[in-house]
Amino acid sequence: MHTYSVRKVGVVGATGYSGVELVRRLANHPGADLVAAMGSAGSEPRRIPALRQIWDESVVPLDLDRLAALDAVFLAVPDTLAAEVGPALAARGPRVFDLSGAFRLRDKALRNRWYPHSPDPELPVTYGLTERYREELGEARLVACAGCYPTAAILSLQPLVAAGLLEPGIIVDAKSGVSGAGKTPTERTHFSEIHGSMAAYGLFSHRHGAEIEQEVGTDVTFVPHLVPLDRGILETIYARLRPGASAEDVTATLQAAYAGAAFVRLTGADLPEIKHVAHTNFCDIGWRVSPDGRQLVMVACIDNLVKGAAGQAIQNFNVAFGFPEALGLN
Image (tube, rainbow, N blue to C red; front, side, top):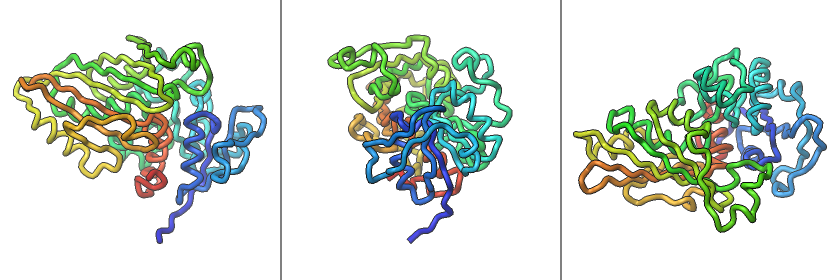
């Protein structure tokens, strides 16, 4: 039987989709003592019916002084609030795992464009995609957990671009369930609007495009779509192989990049589906190359609330504190 050095943790934004997922998993995490689940400042204490007999405490109003005494704080709040409290909390002691996009973009001009409320943080920010920044997480104080759409795209593309296998002109055609839009209802996310329909949005104006390009290292055409599912992301990625690059090179590069990876499953020609990853922290990646050896099509799937949000944050927490990477996630 394993024993772990338990860390005291808190969740802010505990009543949102990602927040509930965090509370559910942290309540049963052998290395985490969930001592605080909070909502916004001034909110009324409330319990979460879905977590009855899993975590029966109340979600209480935001209390920064209480959070400052913890070992780790997870922020599942809008980027405006995360920009305000994330660096301040990290400076006071706890290690902060921010699920918002407030500090994901390193370029100041891009951050000012897409996250205008985000100041220049006074302490270093680590981009929270465990598979790429494992070493940096060990000392990280403020972790900007990767976005849901970018997670699937970066894990698929970054090794291939770094190996010089792809020509310019990559297209990421992405489809997400409605929970990716958050819990606050909008006209677009009402049941009667999305049920039986499907819509593209954010063409050339979605902040996740900049995040994907930052981490992949090349221009990408990113087109997101909203589909009538509660959770899950499927991305179909189109790219041309450079002359001399082969299907075997694609396979070898991906296998080398993710040898031993806890949460990346390479499916090869067996293309993944959302149901294969729902409620898990896995990213499944499949691919095929056209008979002429030039066109690559990849399909990547994640659960946007787990590998795209809460699960990824816990994966980062595990690595940052020296726990087994899959602790509390399988």
